[in-house]
Length: 420
Image 1 (spheres, rainbow, N blue to C red):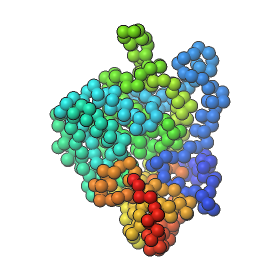
Image 2 (tube, rainbow, N blue to C red):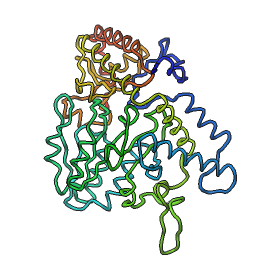
Image 3 (cartoon, one colour):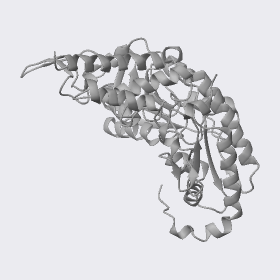
């Protein structure tokens, strides 16, 4: 059975306090914590197997290479890929999407072509495509959302035309928690020969993923949002799509042979993993994926649905609090942005920190979405496997106290940083 109290025992971070308060960590959309299993797996690599990969015949290099390749296999299994050849290790989601925009986009998007995005995209799934559009003189279109944060699928169908080459969409909004129907979007995109690129940074750690069943072309996600180490990420692509790509970063380990006149690129995925990779990070990421698969991604999804319903229920009961995003829990993940009327979002976040509660405040790298909603920022509570109902109760009590003190707190807002 899924037991968050047992899971918490694997996370050393929860032994510390913030001041004299136990840590309540509701900033999982920014980054998650690491279980001891991940930390030990990385330590084991450095202590016993440390060597560069694919560059030596000695024992350590062979062991490191095998561990690195096995990490690709684990991630392929985690997302339902056909083969580990389709898994490219990167630094993070942002890096993955930039790699794709320049390795695929530069050679497949032409002047007058169209790139379709949504207003709910994280900047990382917006700005690379806008840069590409400027370079190639392509046109960018945006799909709107309803006032409660649901994608307008009918408008999406209208915006996608025969000139559309790329449809880039988030699996789960990092602000509103909206879960998009990427399978439905993929079908629409493929009808006109466009590719669909899915930003899975928020979705992949929280729900079952099967790239083949969804019939998507590319998926990008980060290790640090799924219990893995920072500086690790994945770009998955259909093998035929990856074969269309030209390496963006070139150098060591990307080639089979080089002469002064020509180059023969390496097989997948190595041609896209230039230079010495983060082998320990890959080992840690694979361990994180194994940890999540052992728990069961469907169990994680159910746990977060229960917590999300509970947190929305408690926020409904607190005066002056308003929250945003879909009310339908079936299309919402464990992300709840909110504001307290009369208080700056940074003020609320700093006040919650006094209770030992970690949240994020600002515009969450999604400025256009906030402007669409008429907001200058929000406080974001985001949940994960180690969060509990008791923490939500404590969170609600803290917010109730803050609202009662809101008049005094609002007088101090001039001291609060107002950046995004």
